[in-house]
Amino acid sequence: MSDDGLLPLNLMHFARLLRRAGLPVGPSDMLAAQEAFALIDIASRAQVRTALRATMIHRHEHADLFDQAFLMFWRDPEAARAAAALQMMDGRQQKPERAPPGSRRLAEAMQSPQEKRPPAEERQEIEATFTVSATERLQTMDFEAMSAEEIAAAKREIRRLSLPLDARRTRRRRADPNGPHLDLRATIRQSLRTGGEILSIAATRKTTRPPPLVVLCDISGSMARYAQILLHFLHAVANDRDRVSTFLFGTRLSNITRQLRHRDPEVAFQMVAHAVPDWSGGTRIGEALASFNRIWSRRVLGQGAVVLLVTDGLDREGAVGVAENMERLHKSCSRLVWLNPLLRWQGFEPKSQGIRAMLPHVDEFRPVHNLASLHELVATLSRPAPRSVMDKWRLSA
Image (spheres, one colour):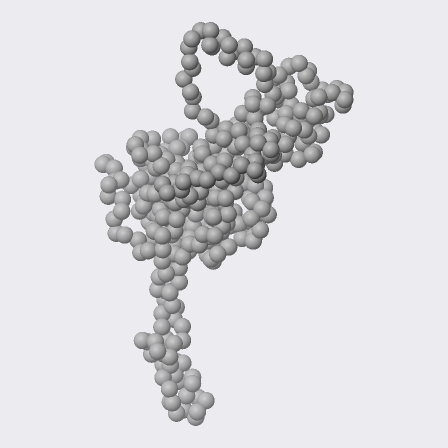
């Protein structure tokens, strides 16, 4: 392959397109792609696609976005015009299909900077009486439908969230002169300084402290996009308060509590990527919960811990062992909240085996698909737990 042709230039523009769409493609990947081109048949579209995918894609969740970008960039304009002409001659209009996830980001990335920047001399006046602000629109937008810029804005908004859990009284006491409990031991100890004469009576008060927070987050293929954004929320929570334990599960259970304690989010997510080998794979909810109950439950579920279970309930093992391990998890914590992105649909019904096995053993069932749902979650966890919020979700035996 000669370097004086248009192929290296097109390869550079394709790499820039992937970077603008949010994929981590660097100069080393471009060099590897050029070396791969020298070993394949350039006339074969399948070999070119395979070579680019092998050299530029390093994570499973980026494969779909790469396939769409390849179809949009390496296309034949003459073939598209011929297909449009044939469609007009036939007099048939094709029904519009639903755009796949990530197509909006690719459409924005395909635009040149001149197209994105509005002309300076044109001034537009917009009537904003009945319009919605960009911030309010971002609050209600689904994470799956966000563009690259909107995802970045959502991550910045998530980093500002705090989770003040409902504080509970503990068995420990602290010294308080106006406390309701007398401390005879401290009173006698103070009297020794004055020769045994009691001049003041020491008092104590019970301390209040938020309970531990344990998060079990699903990172399977159906939850990959939501898990990526929720990790920013978990990182903000882990650095804002103590006693936070975070676990990821797909085909196995991974403890990432130490990794998320790093202040720098980029460094923390890099450490998480190295520690979790089964990102965007299958889901074994029963096996993951069994591992947690067997190894970690006695370590992290003390003192009235609150558990957040983030999953869509779709289990590849047919819900084997899910009900038993969910029951044990529910009995080991004071509050079990299930966060499911499928609840964003109004017609949601618990039809899958995994969802039906999990529902009877949770205290709350809430959606988690946009910023508004995260704000509602923070507000709910900051209030005392209601007695029965799952009555309408209880399934008959």
